[in-house]
Structures are given as structure tokens and as C-alpha cells.
Image (cartoon, rainbow, N blue to C red):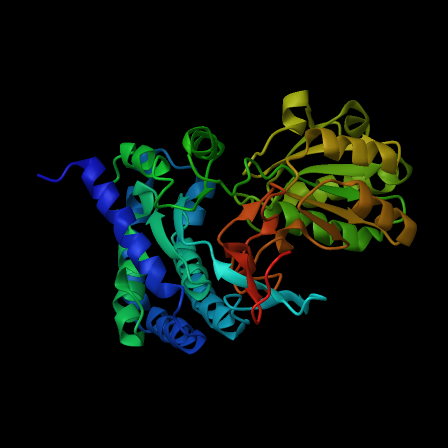
Length: 419
């Protein structure tokens, strides 16, 4: 009888073998698989929706919130977006074999820095089955084998998506084991994989903070991650208030359960009298609960008093913390103290103010006069993303093709020796 440890070991070994073959796959073969897979997702949409419906029906039994169920649900628009993501990845330059730097030394040696795959990626994710498609597309195009470990709440959806994508690989001369879905929901399997640093080169956890902290604590290989998405919108004294309202509402309510949704609104004291009540009314119209500082509650008396914990919170819900700040310096200080270095936005028509905000806010993405929701691989032209990193090594922000590669030095001579 195969033990859990044996299953994990054989899965990782198969991924390593596949990664070796995939590293030398041609760009044409990888792109052909991407385009064919995109077409199959659309063609088999009904089977995908049927599987997803089983997951959605069972979701309450797992204690999932409304925001989590929204992330779990596959709609025609989301499947179409996943397919379009694969097509966009196919259209992007292949980072494998790309010469990133190069030149010739005085002694005649040619020195090139060339892009290469990372190898094997262990990818853990919760709730969002469309991420299965994003991760698969990015990993195959960047020459990496991937071990996909979705949550039990999305098992039916992930299984049918994995089947569609995997069955197409051999049709393009690509190894089937380049994409493997962990079939067991046993949480101990994660622990086994996290010990396999000889087979697995990188682990990417994408889900709740508890999952990510567990992975970071137990992994024996590098981890690409962010813990929270405590994102801010700062409305400066020089803001266009119509623009500010649109950006705040979109940042908070477009999809409140995702990591790039705004959790805190900062308002310059110089426009609080004109803007605080206005934005509170607009937020309430979207059923958002407002938790405000004492100054905010002067203008919005029915706001819930905000606590220190509220300013550090990732609500992932229709809740927002609001604080009126005296100036730009206070806004920047608040963000750098309470934020999660994920995504922070400023609304202003003052160029000097925006430049200072960009320079001093220490976050992976800083938005000027745009919604926090744009910190997304698809929206930023990466085709898709496998996650958003708030680390500074080796990648930061949305992680697409290039972030799933490293490089090697290729040195070519004609007999040179070192004296």
C-alpha cells in the first residue's frame, strides 16, 4: 500500500523529471499548448460549471464566508478571462533563453546572462479555481513543472481544469507530469512536500495568512509570498473629488474579498469637510461598514469607532477603516506603519505630492490616481500571475513569466586560461 509520504515523493520525482524535459521545450510548442488549452476551456465550459457548482453547494459546510464563496465561483466571464490569460501568456516573449545582459571581456571571453527556468514549483492555493489555469499557463511557458495543491473546497473544479490542461500537453510534445494536481486533501501532504528541497525549487502559497505563515515556517526551500493585503487609498488635498470617489468605491467594493481590495481610506484634513460625508454616503450605498477615527466621526457620526486593530486589519469584506490625517507625511507614516507592503494608492493632482508618495511608500505596487484593484498580473500586462509578492527577493509585486525564471552565466572563449 502506498503511504502518503511515498505518494508525495513520487509526485515530486515525476515533477523533477518533467522539469528537465520542459526546460528545453521550444517556444512554439509551449505557445501551441497555451492556445489550444484556451480554446478547450471555452469548449468545455459547461463541464467546468457543473464541477464548480458542486464545490459552491458544499462551500457553506466548510465554513466559507460570502467573500470566499465569491472567489470560489466560476462565472462565464471568469472562465473567459482565464482563457484570455492563456492567450496573452502565449503572446508574451519567452523568458527562457532570453539574453538579459551580455558583452565581451578584454580577453575575448563572451559573457552572457541567460534566462532559465527555476525547475519545480510547489503551488498551494485556496478557493480560486481559476488560479489553476493561471499557474499552469505561467509555469509551462516559463519551463517549470508545477505541483498544484488546491483547497478541498475547490477540488471538483480543480480536477476538471487540471484534466483539460494536462490531457492537452502530450499533443504538443510536452511532458504530462509538468502539471500535477495533488489528489489528497490530507493536510499532512503539505508538510511532506515542504521538506523536499532537493526536488522542489520554490514554494508559492496563495491563500489565508495562517496557510502562508505555516508554509514560511516549515519550508526548506525559498518561499514567494505575501501575508496580507492591507491596502490603502489616500485622498490628498489636491484630489479631484469625483475621481477620488470612483477610485475609493472601486478599490473597496469591486471584489472586497481579494488581496488588492482597499481596507483603509486616508483623507487629508484640508478636504475632510467636503469629502468625508460624501464618500461615507457612497460607501454606505454599497453596504460598506465604516469604522472611523474621532475626526471622521465628526462628519460621519454613525461610523463605528475605529481601533488600532482596524487599521492593521485585512477585512476581506465590506468594511473599511477611515482616518483623517493632517498632511501627506502623516498619510505616508500611517501606511508604512500599518500597511502590508502590498498595494497603496494616492489620489491627487499635485505632481510633487504624487512623486513623494511613490518614493516614500514602501509597497510592492503604488498607484497614482488609479484603483488598488489594478495590482494584478493580467491588468498589468503579465498575461496572468501566480501570486503577488511583498518580499524583495527574488521577485516583488505580481509574479508572471520572468519572475518564474532565474538566470545562468554562459561564458564562451576560444582557449583563454587565467594567468
